[in-house]
Every structure is written in structure tokens, then in C-alpha cells.
Image (spheres, rainbow, N blue to C red):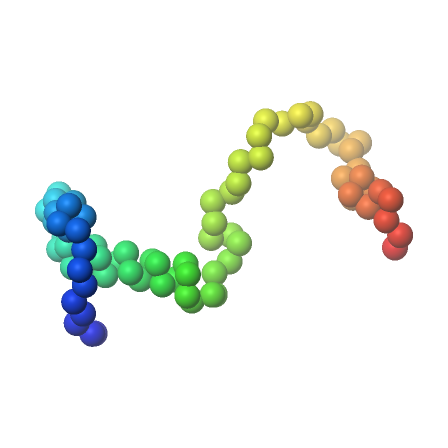
Length: 80
């Protein structure tokens, strides 16, 4: 494991210290976990679309019925 030195605002570090005390962990552990999460989501590139939260698309316009043919609707106007 590599030891590093970073400069952060006092308020930010104080918030990490307070949260660490409340969760009985060290501020170093919280910062290390935050860096690992950032690395996994921005650098690793091995994520899956299933890792993300679903996007909200608004309210349902109409319920589907057993007779609905979504494939037919999606392919309308295309040539196969």
C-alpha cells in the first residue's frame, strides 16, 4: 500500500473525521474507500450497465396488454 499526502479543505477533512467517529472507522479508511470507488467508476472500465441506477423516464403513458407487439412497433418503418 502506498502512503500519499493530499491537501483538502479543513471543512472537508473535519467532515470525514466526524463521519469516521460516528461509524467507528478511521478517516483514512473512508478516504481510501472513496478513492477506490472513484477509481472503479472512472478508470477501471470494467463496469456493467447493471451497476448503474435505473433512469427515471417519467410516468407511464399506458399499460401494456398481452396483445401489444413491442417488437413490431420498434421495427415499424425499417427494412430487415
